[in-house]
Image (tube, rainbow, N blue to C red):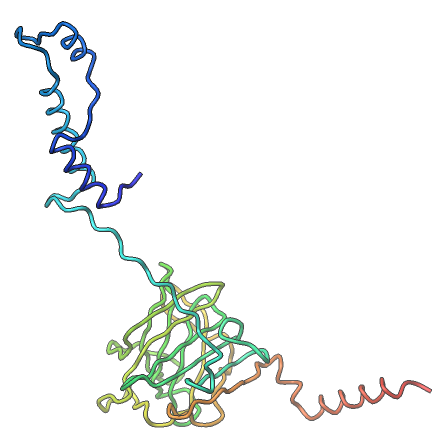
Length: 282
C-alpha cells in the first residue's frame, strides 16, 4: 500500500509529537498493575512509547522519505495522445487520405494533416503499420534528393520523430532534426505521430522551406530495432499537384484496391450490368 505524501508527513509529525497512540506491551501492563517500575518508581509507559515513536518515525522516514527528508517524487501524469480530428480537414488544416473511400486517421492506409501555427507547421501522420510512417517534400514527384520526416516505432514501444534525406532510393538519417513538440503512439497496429517544424530554415541541401509548395511523397513500412526498412508498396503514392501549407485542402487518394473502379472499362462493365439487370431477360 502506498501512502499519499501529505498523509505520510502527517503521520511522521504525529509520531514525533507523541500524539500517535501506542498499545502497551505485556511487561508495561504488569508494571502498571503493581504500580512500580523496574527501580521501584511508579510504573508508567512513556519511555516505551517514546522509543516506539522514535522507531516508527525512523521507519516511515526511511520507507517513504528520501535521504534529504523529502517525500519521494511521484511520476508526473502522462497526457494521452489527442486523437486526430478529421472534422477539421479542409477547414482549419489540410489533409491527405490514402486508402478506402470515406476512411479517416484511424482507418486509412495512410493519413497526413498539416496546419500553420505561428512560425511553425504542425504535421500529423498515421499509417497501418507497426514500423514507420513518413512524408517527403519533393520538387519532381520522384524519390531522390528529398527532405523527409519520419515517425519510427522502436523495440521499446516508443514512437520517435526522425529526419531523413533520400539519396536515390535509400533514406539516410540526418542528425540535424528540425522537429519539436514531438508526440507519438503505437496503438491498434498503427503508428501515429504529431510534431512541429519551422516554416523557414537556413538554406541547406537536406532541409526545405515549407512556405514553398512541394509534391508530397507518402511512405510507410516495417522497422527493425528502430531502423526503417523498405516501404510496404513498390510505388508509394505521391500528391498529384504541389501542396501549399497556405491552402487547406482535403484530398482523397484511393488505394490500389479501389483504383480499378475508376478505369473506363470497369465503369462500362458496371453500366452494362446495371442495364441488363434493370431490363431483365426476354
